[in-house]
Image 1: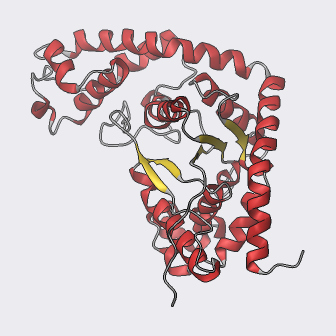
Image 2: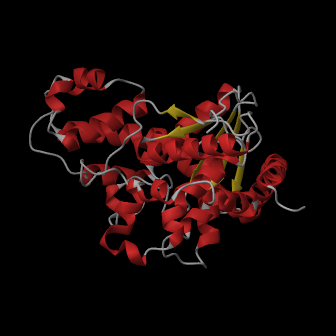
Image 3: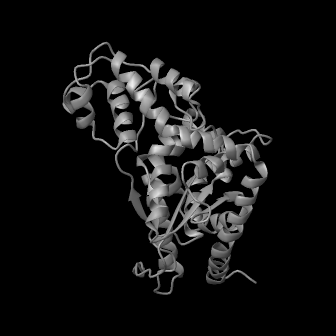
Length: 345
């Protein structure tokens, strides 16, 4: 077996995406979108941010609602600061290279690799025999999403690290089997997200804030107005004890730790600095302060989101232009991949 080539020398590119299922929320912003904007503004890499609607159909969905959900996700990206003049924003299904490369990678990846993915085990559950094949091969499509652009870096959270490892395994195997001693695809590197990346539910401090939670009070949506934000924070689950004066005092107090963490993330402070200000006080004093901070921080984002979502033509124009720009990058990579594989053309 030949040695796997790793000497990739192509340009630096960043790729990431979110599913258009449910409304994007504060956890999505602090955990991903804020980081996307920072990477975009660093300006040392081309940034490609996709609305992954092909992934959305691996689970039951409403076909009539999907186009509007794609527009809403794109509007949230832009409202959060992703600039369509600086970054490429598009719908995954609008660029055929994703699907075509996914089939090639299905034949490069191994069944055992896919079956080890914990997300399939979690989503498939006890009824996994009835799950769609797409749910099993979801991470292979993710690899195609990334490598269709030869992305060198991907912002990832804890729940996606395993999928990025699979992407690297697929790239390495392709390079070894077909690369003729050259690294055709990069071994994509993770961009580890910083503090504030893991925001928990307002109803359960041990569960991640989620678009799929049945309770809308569990999350702060990016489109929520000031009154809604304040109401949700007022209703957020807490415990009867006052805030501690040290970070160590937050241990075993999941809800208190989450609210302090949100305050810290929105103000750019550490948890220790927040507790230096509010330690010893009850939630009756802390929650209004947190609500004020959240409303001030999120108001420009929610206002811009509502403006964008009301202008369907503008969103469609941005998505169409983004798809054209994405295809310019992906099409020649796919063409060369097909030639390497030996497809007739």
